[in-house]
Length: 188
Ligand SMILES: [Zn+2]
Image (cartoon, rainbow, N blue to C red):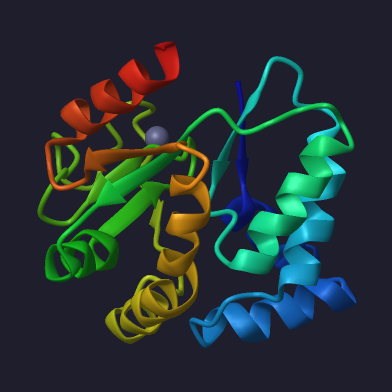
């Protein structure tokens, strides 16, 4: 399956430095959510190439986005099979997000306290010595993002519950256990 991450799409848009990218950058750096119209336009562009299926990561986040996605999929004769809800403790989530970083060379994910490289400063996978952090992974931005999630995103769960699509996964379990739980859902 293709992974469609709106975060990745938005980051590449803002790095492209286009007029839309600059708008995206200003909004993201404040920790706010990019408008539904922009996100839906980006998703629509990517939907035609999904082949066997896709995993939406970070989308839809609002009721209007959920409704827009229904239409985008219907136009292409596709539908949603599962909505995975990762149930988390908010304080622990702040720790997880503010500590994460990636290898600048191969993109391997690491964390200050939860998953350090085996040798400090050297990527386990490629031996790279440069790492990077997302500028929006600071505590204030994370708190703002969580408030936005509670206010705008969590309320769309009933929309999918009514369709019988929501599968809850304990997001506080170990990474391997969370992955296995999601795999089991997708294999059904
Ligand atoms: Zn690496």
